[in-house]
Image (cartoon, rainbow, N blue to C red):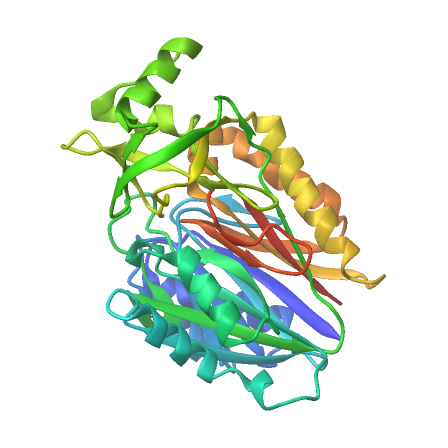
Length: 388
């Protein structure tokens, strides 16, 4: 059986917050150590102080996690807080691994991450999964997912997201034990003889005709259809009666993101702002030559997408009862929806029934699973269901 416990705190002192979380986990597990803790923490905290206090207060066998941009559980939702999922199982085997130096050598970091997976040598389990949390600000997260798939010969299914920093897009951290490091990627390997469920959905639709990306520079979009990209967004704002302020463009961009046409649907990319060179800056790559559209959605569509992701995940459980869900959604979704982001979380709980969920608002979402829309996404609901 797999037991789970959700913990949440908004206490401001890092040490006290860690102790509070540990106490909640101790009470839920009656003092027995968790096999794995997954921690999502706001940028307001001193991470290593928080993690050491948490570790010393409940003595988990391993800890992974990342900095976040909004935290939630079935009972709580907040910003500037910490959410934790504790797992203890006689059916699942957990291993934590880390890859460092993403910016300098992404291939080496991916290789280091995968080298620690036990499923490569342990053939006692039918199913292999890994939750992947990455410093998305290091770039090329989509390529990282592809490399992980190649290095594992397609035998693993991946889910997860990019670390956040409360929407500052400045410096994010990955947690490995009591370490908090940037420019890295961490994984929680999960081996099982019964399937987990992974679901993906976003609810956005094209609002413009298809266009071709004709020039990019690093993670900036320069031109579309040989027209300056900023002019394309300006024209769309005029055609749809929206206000587009180049100096404060994020409010407009949150409602007008880019969809990159891919096999099976659109991968979403959120523009962050207009650069001094009048280019459109992104946190993830928009490839030159890609076919794109400016996309639109509604709050109800976002809630419906979360429901659909969970329905897809439940279909993979082969009749098993959901025990707990890890839920990842974009900081841009929270910022766009404001207080209505609660609609999406209510939709998650309604579909889960009595099962709990834990998650965070991330800088991109990761999904590489059978029958799902694969890769690195923005503004997309990704869920992993763990059965009882």
